[in-house]
Image (cartoon, rainbow, N blue to C red):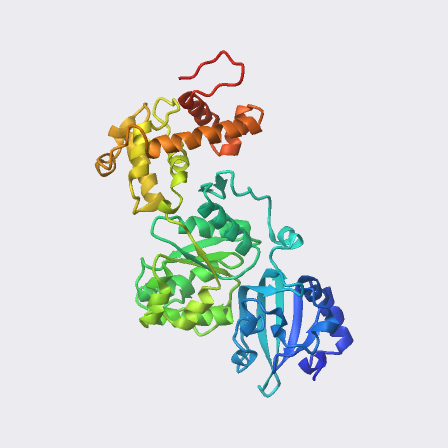
Length: 463
């Protein structure tokens, strides 16, 4: 079985020293998938020593990438006909049987005459604390406080989303954000960027549905003077503008077959060609895509390239619809209301009747629709609290609130219990309790008044 020098890159000892100095796990295989090199980080991450791994098939990692030998390309020969680099998140199984999430890359290795002779693969333990510290640009708010990089929500559907964002932000893997219109996909993309090592670079957004095929191609890749009628000067494309940062392709499912082919080439080669120019330009961009469409169905219908889909959907992230985390509705409504202060400047809130109507509404337009409704109702309310009469007719004429039970009463009991727990944890410090609930002190005070909550032994009586 060939040892490491089959790569033709130097002596085995020299390459072992280089490989062991790397912070990522690294191994090589021959064309049959047998391990020929295994560095120290690979030992630490997998639990398999170098002596145990050498000569074994890479299927010893046996996670969800078992058929891809941890490289995600099927049996290794699948990617060896040409030099292919693949980055993907997947799980592996360590020597002691634990599953571990990694981000890994694989590149096939060809001989001088183009014959496949092996593969080089690297992988990072994304849950390792040293990896977090190395890649994370600054302090993060912990999920569960109500706010996370501009997003609001404490229900499990949202805290799971925060966890996925933090997870993928530690790598440069391509992200596919899925979700209904108005659910906040662009905010998720921005959060991925702000949590990543590229946070200091540009965050550039392109709406693929807003431009026709020719304009989108120029928008993405740029053009040279005279490339088409109206091209009066050279123009940089969005890929160049996003160099060193993140590019969001919003509504990626709307791009034409021609643009799909060119985008596939960019992903594979990491370089672009401006319209009217044949000179390739290297780009370093983290790609994030968003869509409300079912891309798998589009692939089945032949309207979206399968090879492009699988390169874009390396790490899918699904944004929950508002109906999937209904208990966050009050928190969201209060936050939106706080952004529209009344002319007189007096803090205001939502009446119980208004909250009941908001909770009973199905919200087909998700969080964006809720934001628009609160802005409308705030204008209607003027200086006062937002009541039922201030809401749009389709919401206020919805199902009536039950007198003895229902969303408001059940929600009120939960809110009062949550309020008492927060105050108890903080020794009845209202500032700290408000922070733990993700609300302002004014909102906390209003909730205390609404639920008749006062500090123990206090003569204050709240009605």
